[in-house]
Amino acid sequence: MSQSTRRPMAAGNWKMNLTRSSARRLVDELRNLNYTLESVDILVAPPMLLVPTVVKWVSGSTVAVAAQNMHWESKGAFTGEVSAAMVREVGCTHVILGHSERRHVFGETDEWVHRKLVAALENDLVPVLCVGEKLDEREAGRTLEVVGSQLDAALEGVSSEDVLRVVVAYEPVWAIGTGKTATPSDAQEVHAFIRRHLGEGRGSETAERVRILYGGSVTPSTIAGLIVEKDIDGTLVGGASLNAETFVPIVKSSMKR
Ligand code: 13P
Figure 1 (cartoon, rainbow, N blue to C red):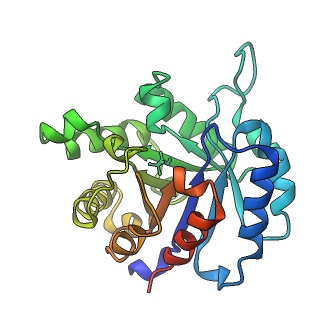
Figure 2 (cartoon, rainbow, N blue to C red):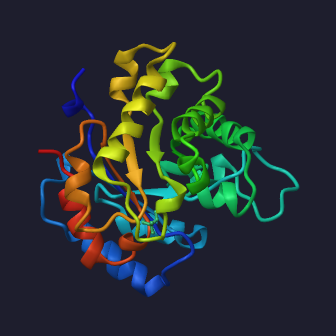
């Protein structure tokens, strides 16, 4: 299986940003993109209240919509939460799980991420599973150990067939929102490790088919260097996904040549 069989993906995580009108302008630009849409998947992850509206706006286009989070239980007394079935019912096809802000600002554990991932798969959602080390962990030379253990915890007991439905996003915490992008070779080293790690016990054929995105201060000027790396299959973009002027060039550059 060659890397060319992995469709690149450009995903925009809006986090807690954008109003209805600014979101509308951005989505219109994405819909109007007149390029070979067959060669890149576009995903947007709006704040939850905007999700049903954005789903309507993208209908008829190939732009897909993700939730930024969900709970693992199907229903019950969980104030402020939404279930995987609810996310699916409003038209999301994907859900971001284990984002570093969920882990480090809201205290999500590896165990929670695992439960959410299983619930997402059961509800026919594609999990965009985020992993990544903090600065002190990188400086202590523990990057691969941290990323490996986040992967192991999230994917424990998940079949190879289901792993093929997961998109992994490597987002070094120190690169998120800081303007510091990992160098292409640093990112590639971790992506290659993630692919090898996914292959352990599942086979390299499976691992070769899993898409691994890079996230962390991606801009129109850094994307080109990242996307040429063998194991980088696209990007998960925060700040630069909030307006068409920066996100459209990133989408276009995410196509593998
Ligand atoms: P920035 O692109 O703003 O660094 O955010 C990356 C991110 O967290 C995407 O999920």
